[in-house]
Structure formats: structure tokens, C-alpha cells
Length: 269
Image 1 (cartoon, helix red, strand yellow):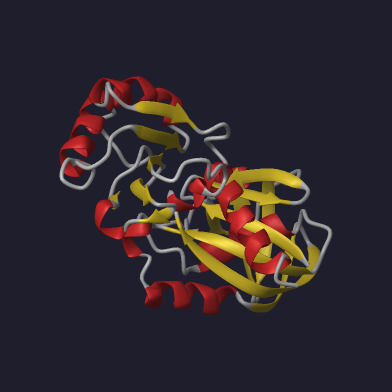
Image 2 (cartoon, rainbow, N blue to C red; image 1 turned 90 degrees about the vertical axis):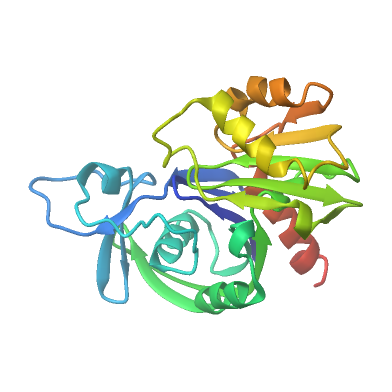
């Protein structure tokens, strides 16, 4: 059984498993015949599932015309499945336990169950014309941002800012647990913004969080693709805080999900 932490972002799919980390563009489009030979590899993929074919990754971004990716937050869709299949094709196994991410703002019990039911079970698909048949035995769903805490849970209390491509998550950890009323998902990210005035963005985030985070501002961890660029602006707004960038800010959620999966599924067996 292979345990997988899967952070399927709108921009990139990030995976952690015992073999290391891997990623590819999350872009998915319908298939079309191309003139001439197109080299296929782990970044340029053709995925076939239920008699439908898709371009995935760099190939989809370069040659796709009808894209399946949508701006909504939901992960219980074909794009999630296709990106997982692309990732599974690079792993030497057929039996998996996975923990996947879900935006905090929609991480309700109903949404988690829909996502679990979509993923669990035996799946037959092709990647780059090679057949695969895998079984997903266990599925856990973790709020994005919060999952990163488990990549390095060295503090009992911590605020996390997850700067993603379609959403930004502000997560409050108190006594090593997520505090719902002090956490928030902003319905924009760095791929959807027209105005990329980073200083204004963090000012707006702080204004929204003032009542949620007014009990604690000493320790903030930054994750996500834009964490290094946002670091200076977060420090401007929280000058008295201890602000750090996660040691692997791109993969922080995937690393945390993997650790959660190891505890839940490997140690239980």
C-alpha cells in the first residue's frame, strides 16, 4: 500500500509519497488530434478515462482548446481525478491510501463525502497510451493550509497564510488544532488577480483578519507559491510577529497530507 499526500491546486498538482515529491501543471483540456508527432512524458500527458481522452500538464497548456479547469473552489470533479491519474502513473504500485486537500472555506462534511466517494475504489485508465488499474482503499480530506501544519508541527499555536493560485487561506492553529472561527478562505488567488499590488493585498487580508487573529500575532508561517514574494509585506503588517517561510513552501500542504496519511493508515495496520 502506498500512502500519498495530494495537493491538487488550480495551477500545479503537488504530490508527496515514499518515493519523494513530484508535480505537474494541473491544466486539463479535451483531446484533439495533432498534426505531427508530439513527445509525451511526465509533464506532457494524454490521459484516457471512461472512453474520453484529455491533454494534461504542459501539453494541455500548450495545445489545449477546450479546458475543463474552472475558477470555482470545488475539487470533486474530473480535473481532480485526471490529475491524480497522471500522478499515480509515476508510482510503482496499484494500491493506495491518499489524503487530498480541500479549500477550508468549503470543507464541509457533505463536500468531503462527495470527494471521498468520487475517489475511492478501483479505477482503470491510460496515461500516454499505457494501461493502469489502481485501487484507492482509503481517502482522507484535509483543509488546505491546515494540512501544512503537519509538515512541521513544532508549535502549539500558529497562524498560517497559504498564498495559492485561486484562493488564499488564513488558518489559525490553537493548541495544535484548527480553530474554525479564526480561520478564513479568501476567494481570490495570484492566478486570478488583475491587480498584483502585494502590499494592498496583505493590507486587505489583515483588515479582514483583525477580529479573528486579535488574540494572537506572534507566530505566522507562510506557504504557497507566492510565500517568498509576500514575506516582506507580511512583515510590514505584522512587525511584532515571528514570521517564517515553510522550508518547502511549494509542497507544504502535500508534505503535511502525507504525514497525516502515514499516521492514519500506515500505523493503523
